[in-house]
Length: 195
Image 1 (spheres, rainbow, N blue to C red):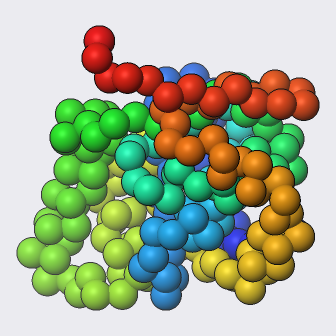
Image 2 (tube, helix red, strand yellow; image 1 turned 180 degrees about the vertical axis):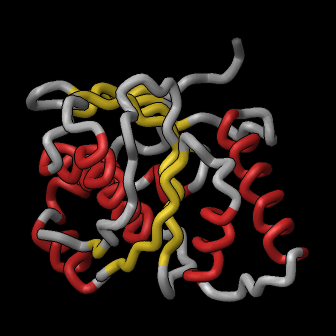
């Protein structure tokens, strides 16, 4: 069940020795950050990751505190999507707000600088395609894959309906900070934030 169409024109080169690799995905015609959109982006990320680094078999996932990461749809969907892409999830950590202190914030600051340089050079940056062109234009993002993706939400609603019972069990986890995945179960933890 493929939900995402992606170009095959990006050359990742030899990524095995990189400590950090960013996969920046620009969605065509979709500006939502609901659980469906995030799940489809996650699917695209894992598909691209397996293509670039086929030796990867396990993953630790970290997200910010967006509400879409707290749903049973996300919890079940991310586990299933990872499995279908040959990746065993070890843990998922849902951090509290980073207040612009994390690595991803520094990465986004670099992206914004590149976009402004592109626009100040006289180029238009008002469409998704132009945004990708802006981010690829400088060649400065050596550890970053920038690509345009299209989401097909039509299959998601059917997927959620077919798995309603399991998703309801996952919803019972409530608000959590960490999930550990095992072969046939998961452990969910919520931390007090006192320490």
